[in-house]
Length: 512
Image 1: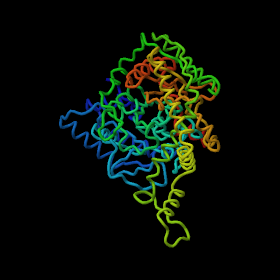
Image 2: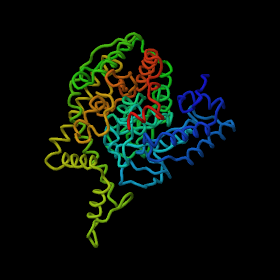
Image 3: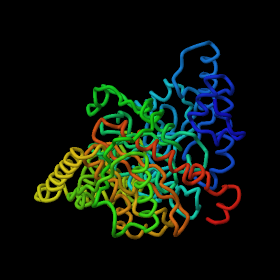
């Protein structure tokens, strides 16, 4: 068994799980260490919207009692986790980063949260996010942005910037995320962490507050490929409460991560996901990673997916259309915020609804609701939403054609490293372009993963490589990701994240 670091927050989830299973440490010790870390650094990073100290320690004590009693426990029992604030948590606030749900306490758990509790993972708290998962920087959170631990003046990605910054600042060994167009993978890329979007339907969406129902997918986030695989195995599986849930065995992701073997695999470099608009340092690290895969025994070929060029346009018609429908439930009548219009003695339901939605929704949410309502309106449905769905079919065909030739596809995860806070807030199109490489996977429902590829030469900030696999072949992500991760650790002389600044010193001064 590997010796644990003196600071328990620096241990991987797999290391913690082994030590917990051998009773070398207790879950209370591990959970308290992370709560102490949160108290020490989250004032700088703002990763959490709510920290459930009492609940996390109670869950940890319960796991310790079960272990002492000799019960059979899951592989991650006792390892604490952070949960993105888009997943309902019974008795714990769920805001989706929005004022319209401020103070809402759900009466039930999302299926993913239920699985975490049953597996014995103490839930440390709820992580910050772009409002209703609309954004690529976490700057659209109604409660203020999260910050990138590599440089506190930069974004940690979005919408799951809270979950990625929690991991990169060692405030949790594991986190959950959701990925509608890249909201797990892009934050992972800019923080040197690992994130996976499973096959659509591979992880239940029940209790996940919907943004775009045909695109949303919950998934695992970690600091290593193996940690992420262990969490994937806990989260995944059929759920009768979700009509889109796949009734099939969970792919052998943990076994693939432990095997870490790419010998004989055919890996396709996507021609359309690179070149103009991609930062040179990001591209350099990607090319080096591809060369490493060849050294490990994989065959690399270039693959063309011509309809990927239209993915961004199709996505930003489909997502707003579904969002405008899903967010109609926030009507001030059932739950959440209620605002009465000024100067109206006996307001109608419509007036209360309008005043509440005006006060409760941020600018980005309003922008997408308006776009979606327009795209779905009479006379425009076929021209916009219908056409976007046709493009979606062509993108799925591109994937199918590619997977007849190769086992997985690879590309840079995001075109640039983390940009500065505020740089793209006034330019929505520039913000949307951050998802140009990740969106195709959501449109087709195939699984994708991002792992760190190194640090860009221009700014010393993390870049990521994206791996894409056919539907229900999620294990291929972990086989390739783990093999490449090991090679990159050797190349860089240790995990990329070990090079991040200490939040107690350099990072604070740098981002001030």
